Amino acid sequence: MTISPQALAELVRRVAEKKKARDITILDISKISIIADFFVICTGSSSVNVQAIAGEIVERVKEEFGGLTPRMEGYREGRWVLLDYGDVVIHVFQEEERRFYNLERLWGDATVVGIPANL
Image 1 (spheres, rainbow, N blue to C red):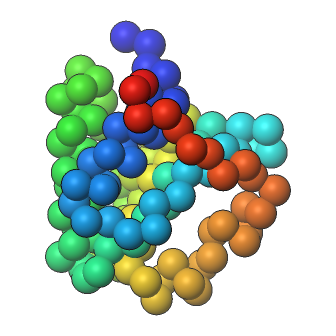
Image 2 (image 1 turned 180 degrees about the horizontal axis):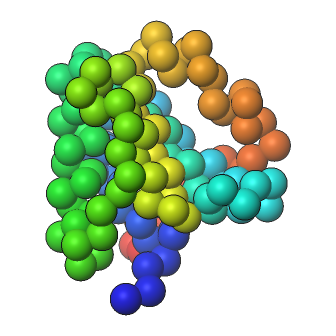
């Protein structure tokens, strides 16, 4: 099964919204890096919320894309969970960590994407 990075990023955005993630940003880094096509960055209100967002993303992606599972870091602590699906890397932060790491500034040359909801 070939998975469109855009479709995966859009599914992640929708799931994060339903789990009450805030400040969801999708960066297209494909023209400036070989590590991925998209970063999806969002903020949870607490470690429990960060874990819930990340956990739901993993479950929904697994359902929608035939068992696809990410490499995952940081879930136990719930401060910054990283889900790496290869072409799409998801960062679920608590507010303090998001401000500290400021990935949007670090990847300032990336294009902020508004992916159509009908993908």
